Image 1: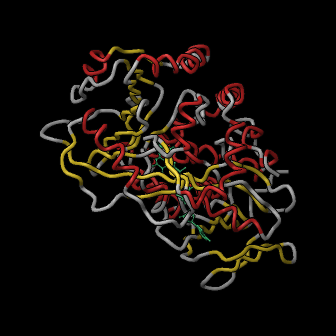
Image 2: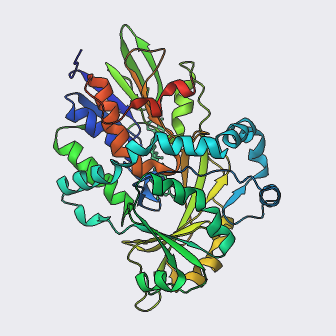
Amino acid sequence: MNETSGDVAVIGGGVVGICAALFAQRAGFSVTLVDPVEPGSLTSFGNAGIVCGGHYVPTAMPRAPMELLKLALNRTTYASYRAEAVPGFLSWLAAFWRASAPENLYQTARDTLPAMGETVGLHRKLLAEADAGHLLWETGWLAVFRNEADFNASAAERDFARSAGVDFDVLSAREACELEPSLNPVFKRAINWRANASVSDPFAVSQAYLKLFLEAGGELRKAKVVSVAPVDGRWRIETDTGPFRSTQVIMAAGVWSAKLLRSLGYDFPLKPKRGYHRHFAPQGNAGLSRTVVDDTVGYVLAPMARGIRMTSGIELAGIDAPVSERMVQRIEPYARGLFPLGESLDEEPWMGRRPALPDSLPVVGKAPRHEGLWFDFGHAHMGLTFAPLTGLLLSQMMSGAKTIIDPRVFAPARYV
Ligand SMILES: Cc1cc2nc3c(=O)[nH]c(=O)nc-3n(C[C@H](O)[C@H](O)[C@H](O)COP(=O)(O)OP(=O)(O)OC[C@H]3O[C@@H](n4cnc5c(N)ncnc54)[C@H](O)[C@@H]3O)c2cc1C
């Protein structure tokens, strides 16, 4: 049945919720987007701007004993944890460990190949519609490896990418510096993953998609949702500015989704993989024409509208734990060695919360135990990348249309 009418409330206005709202609207629903803050201003504001294309091998927990020891001692540059948060992460970490087994990672890589063929094109199309095509740079991204061992560790991914027909070039340090002349050759090898793109201002991207939604008659309600409950065949949405009703609900509140769903009996293992950024002015005429990922140290240098954005790896900490300088302090000396960073442009580091399920994939689809309730959260490291795709996919599922990819890859049944 093709049911493309009625009203839908989208809870959460990060890039994921905005895209869910936009595509639900385009499928014929009358849509209200609900968020207490400016849409796109939390996690979606400060990411590294990479729109992953071609293929995706999820971030994994290391398996080498020495690396695990360094992690346990809180000595790595790519991850950090707060001791008080550890008990709350134990079962999640056990599941993340299982998901990190190479056979599971590459199963995910195979399962997501159809999705990865759509990501960049969807952003390109939406940004063009919003007159914001200039935000998208289709220049690939450069992974640099400071030693041969780290480069060799990427062999499995290169083999996978090659077999999937993904475009990339393996470069020497000299060749990489020809592509990006401002880089210092403190690394041995590089890979230019050409199928990837990046955006120069993730917040502006969210705002561009929000503009498309509002201009087409979408409603934005500034309110914090306190609870959602089925009442008489509809949904009652209780907010801090009063209740309202809706025929259907899309839960897209990033890492906060799990708490809102608990009273409905869903217990998703959704945790904040927190991450930081800080902007720097480049020295002199230095610049980057693509995003650079320091694979050995575990940070990203992204050329952004505001300056060079240095983003960190993962901090395991409570959602509301205070911001810490530790991660950016650990990576900054390495970043300065790789690229001539000038003065810092931010007084303190920005922090965001990647909404992460153990298998690093979002849940997208119908709630198994409730009519009219839909999930679109848990995008972890790939929220910017996947937001238009999962929004479109969900709208197709909601309206009974043919779906752009097989939705089973993101099925809620993985966790329910
Ligand atoms: C350092 C860093 C680098 C990253 N780099 C990349 C990258 O290069 N490429 C990529 O694809 N991804 C990247 N990511 C991941 C990406 O940013 C996230 O996956 C994405 O922003 C998640 O979007 P979201 O809309 O689910 O969550 P959010 O942006 O956090 O939005 C959730 C929204 O829900 C709202 N909300 C919460 N509770 C309620 C409530 N009770 N009622 C109503 N609304 C509510 C919040 O106010 C918020 O606006 C990175 C993340 C970090 C931290």
